[in-house]
Image (cartoon, rainbow, N blue to C red; front, side, top):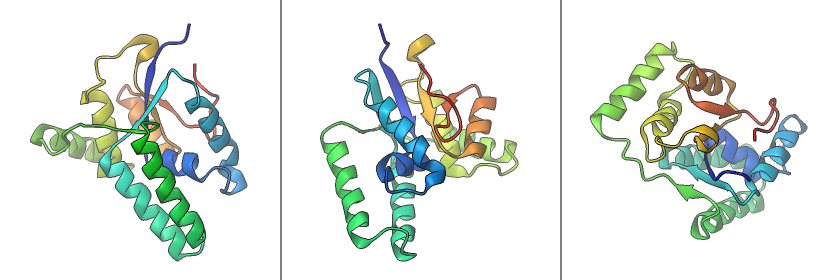
Length: 171
């Protein structure tokens, strides 16, 4: 029996998931693995407002530099909207702006010697301090990212992480 598992997607994982299969060959396999993993009925994908903002900013940049077409740009935004409306992707209700969480995120950025940025640090804080911090064992929250620096720092902080572009699919 497979356990229900909250999975937290950062902006890079959202891009890999929502741009698959229209992405370059280097991350196409990761997008396929991620899509298959998230199709499991026991997986509950989450992200947060800062990650969604970062995702949208990256889409804007890709459109501006012609990495995706106008149609591709609008399609991804409509897809994101549909996923949120149909609860295929959930938005974390974590209050990032409490001083203790801002302070913890800033501490993580400084501790990592700027390997990660503030939004990356907020994702780690969300997993460690957010609404799903009480899950453990096979149900522990999984952070999914294709950002290797975020992966490494999160693991140093005790977060379970999967990087689908170069790691095997977790259970």
